[in-house]
Image 1 (cartoon, helix red, strand yellow):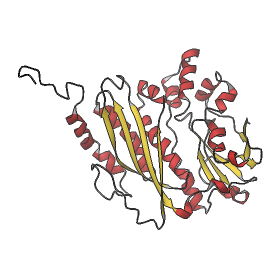
Image 2: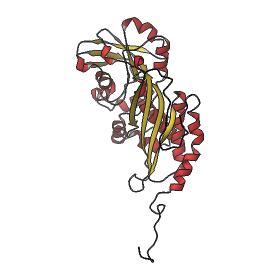
Image 3: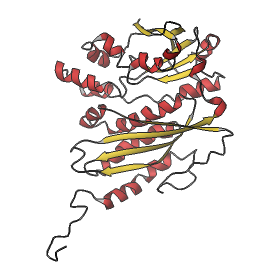
Image 4: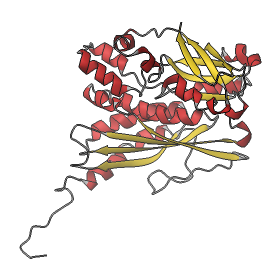
Length: 334
């Protein structure tokens, strides 16, 4: 290098490593909230997190990875940062919960053009609200400052959930049989799926929402940790459970049994959500059923003799259908 050449720095390139390091210290209090009942085997902040599974006799590890999709654009635009964090956790933890597992560890990836401590802290605060609720540790993550790669005003979010359960507690969708009953629990809205269609409808139809309506539209994905917990406490081991995300009821349920020649005829309640209906009135009806959760965010499949007891587990449980041999999933709106 020439003695007269300028000495370039990482900060001049748009990355402030000292600001990133101080962020880890700033969120320490939030992280500790997720370690009140479960503990890491080593302190937070190392290169990898460790968890002691010796409390399980025959542990099975479950994993999941997801994001919040294009909903992030509206969440950022309308300053719903905590909701973004909750969405991220729920989209991952719910998937792990479908297996019968306990969520034990969560990691996040945040890609940003420039570190803004307040913004990131609010997102992580939303994560810790949900992680604390389901007794899952925020075990670490990555905050990547990528100027020129992540557009200004945008945040990339991904999450990774790890669960564990006893081998005998792992649910087996292969046990689903004709005559089994599907029980559904309500969603809070579109959750974090189908927002490319939502955004298109808003733009093309020129829809306007009040601040309160937009808050409702962007309600975070519900965390369905109480449903598996209360079912287990009632002595019920479902044949299977499903988190209703992209693909709606037909795809998320069908993946568990269609290839085995089984099907289900579903009859679900009309979605009583005025803000959601404001969007849905402009969507193709069959496409909406194949895209959105249509008001049902969680489903458990149980044997007929367990239905009455299962309906008392968690609020708002309702029978939505029965398994048959049609090799198809049809959805009728009541």
